[in-house]
Image (cartoon, rainbow, N blue to C red; front, side, top):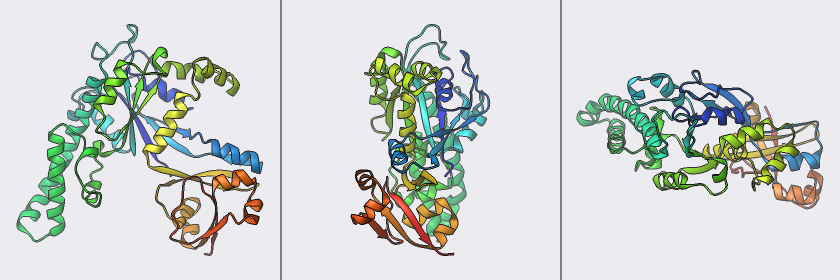
Length: 366
């Protein structure tokens, strides 16, 4: 599943530095606006301690983790929705992503120029929110114009419902709020799905802080948390400066010592990747054998045949059954055979909803 998270933010907030730490792809990180002109795409490994534990137990020839794509998108300025700066390009790039990581500058440093002359993460957030909302409003108005006549004069129930839903969204956007918080029933989301609205995408706010604030946050972070409390969005504290220093260390041991010295158990990059994975509403199941131990990405709520289809479409088409071992059972008993002998291998049919961490083997016939 090639799912993408787009990193966005005003120029010089640290998003390209974070991208460099996240990915082997190198976006320029410079002290001036628009240093990232084209979107850079990095394929990011998702850290998962469970995969490492399974690999220890099975000792396979290969270990293959989950990945997601991270896109570093060029910074934008006021007026982007009208094409100012790199506006049209920025908005087009973000439309193609599945979720948004919004980097906010939450540190003071006179040596790093801010595009608006001062540090204010709430103002920065509102600039980007406004530009995305204006673009969404433009898109929704076009849809309203398309369905309005059918809704008001004809007997087209679908057009009438689409008009009602789009009108709710229009009013919500006009009040300065993003579509993700609009009062729309889940079953009515389909009426705006074809619009790929920018502010309907799930968002994670990454507060880029200085080294002294990475454990506890600061006043800027508290303001961000208060500002987004009604958005159902996660706020993550991270220091791009610390992460860039960690990235320069060659060995895992050196990185762990560096983290321990700072009082950190895990790098901010790891936390960010895990949060992005969660943001996309994803889950993981595993296959485990002597040839390979592998993590597979699915959406939460998928059935066993859908999960099998991630490996190969034939697995889904010819699905017979799934043999499932829970991760905790596999680890406690130590092997697939031990789980079978203990009665911890369950045979599941087409209606089985795959749980995060399931270890699975599929039987199929094509």
